Picture 1: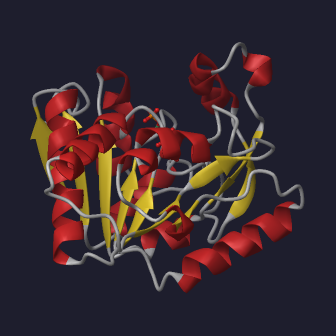
Picture 2: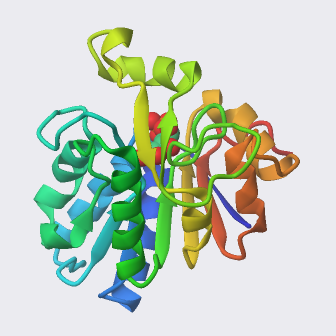
Length: 242
Ligand code: F6R
């Protein structure tokens, strides 16, 4: 595991964007696994800037996102499809037909998950998977539980995740209680994994996830077994690491 410690969120974002840009430059038709949330917003801004400068071409890139709230449409401004469009896809020359997010409007959970596993499989595999880290150690929406879920599945979000996401909604009642998420095996199948973490509120979970025991109660801890993981974080997020 490679740890890259940066001064602050802005430097974390540019370091992460440089890694993604290098991936796209080395393999223009690469498959990117993408995440939403606050952690990668700066990374996406940096990628848009590189595209606008003429330094990056997304025309051959395929992407698959980690997760989507069950019940939210792509037009809902809290859906992860909407997030990806507004933070990245609308601003670069990626072919939206080659971008995938689980279908939040598919009410049949089994079908939604099967369909998404098929979409991911058809890409031929993720070259670089970008991840954020939840306060409870979740990656995607793989919440702490007694086993690692393999493929895409429907999760009941934990209270801690609902609380963390309430800031994006009018009130806690409006936060969806279920989501579709890629499973741990799919995430672990990516050739390379890039985690972005920032802020003192992530310091405890960074310590547990990357330096503590490997357990499904801290889903991100499984990343310790992946052969090519880079964690880019700011000083505050690494403050509990000696
Ligand atoms: C988002 C996702 C989540 C977030 C995590 C951290 O697609 O899968 O696992 O990465 O909840 O969120 P932030 O970055 O908002 O702290």
